[in-house]
Length: 327
Ligand code: AMP
Ligand code: MG
Image 1 (tube, helix red, strand yellow):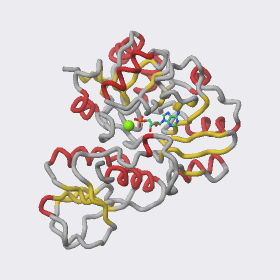
Image 2 (cartoon, protein in one colour):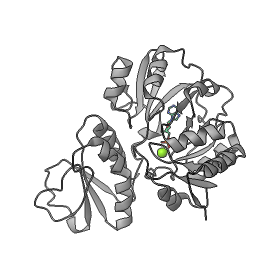
Image 3 (spheres, protein in one colour):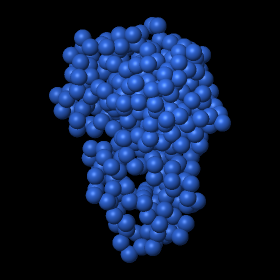
Image 4 (cartoon, helix red, strand yellow):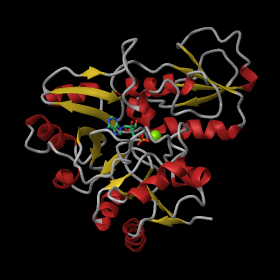
């Protein structure tokens, strides 16, 4: 049984040593918990795919302690004015950039692509851990492939206990939603996955409108975060618009997931994501609440669409994929 260790200096050094000796370690970031390995160690990275049962076509995000390390893993770097502006503004933080890959990074990390996804996380424990490790750390979310992302150390333990070498417990994550992934093509940006950084914020900093991949019918899937079914709880989800009739639903077996208020005149178990209608709070509680509903024995989740702006768009993206039918 793997230990949950508090994020003290000693434990962080132990986790860093584990990474340098080829181990795999779960650690907190501001988005969700990651499962990390030395990005230069193909065998250690292979174990991540094995443990998550993640298909080898799904590339990993490489985490750096500091933006100055970006040229160890990618080619265009800080000399590209657009990359420079994004890095200055959003790093450390929940923005992942897809850049041309450095040849020293083993191809298993990027699933054979000639691009690499990188970010500098803003979480204290993640920063100390990455600095102590001294190497770039390839880390997808610390959950089995396709299932709910972990926002607490206990979620990782429940899902992957015994399969990982160490779990560093840094408490609940602050954003609770994955990073926004952006591909940089010369002077153009394309959002590959909606996430904790809003499209509005990106457009403001980039001083241009950005294209969102996969939003048009017939768009090619370029990243597994775009798979129709992903980020899913075990309990089936049925999406509705606020105010829509619940008449035909088996409400005694449902849990109703509301944005800011329970549905009026209905008797049903309710989880409210943010009583003050704060999208950031709603985003940070989403996966946590879904984990809890999964454990509650509810047979169906009836979930409201969030307002389609800012982080509401990212939450709706997750709900859309979480509710897509199992194939
Ligand atoms: P996860 O950390 O589990 O949320 O997964 C990382 C996400 O980053 C996946 O959806 C990957 O497909 C995406 N990703 C990683 N590398 C690349 C890349 N080179 N190009 C496009 N997407 C990428
Ligand atoms: Mg994931």
